[in-house]
Length: 201
Image 1: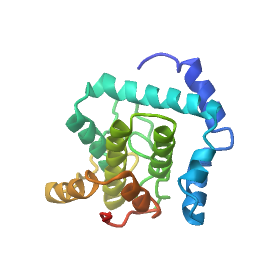
Image 2: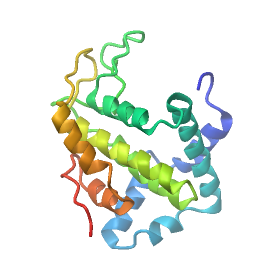
Image 3: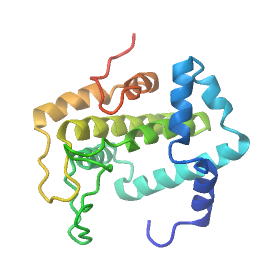
Image 4: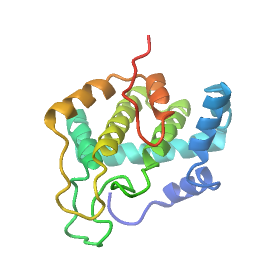
């Protein structure tokens, strides 16, 4: 998707995040902690919010479909590369932020919070009426990327971050790609780094 951000997207963003980037994450955490999830979380999704949430959801999925054309394996590999920090952009060298990945990274930097924000907004998308199967797969990919980046802690500015060993990558795929929404909720209660996901009975 090229060109300026559509007005409907910026308008939706300004409504949904007017109280800060962590609004939905804080709301999710509060309700998980108090035992009022999902009702308390759902109650915050007003009719206005629902429409705006679906605008952002549809925009995200349209961008993914544009590049991956429904190929779930290709989409998964993109998330894996994102987590590994191997998407170095030599066309836009910016010195300290030339790798496409979740900010921040590296052994001496603050762990990323973006995966948690994304996970909780996916919950909002589904409760607002988004395609639950589609967003469950995306949510699994988000969790997988989080686990990969947590292990590798790639650097923001080098062109040769190491990739995860293929055997370990296979192990993480087995763990994350079968998770239910509630299993992902349990996993994302951890911060900053994940435990190995536990499959709920």
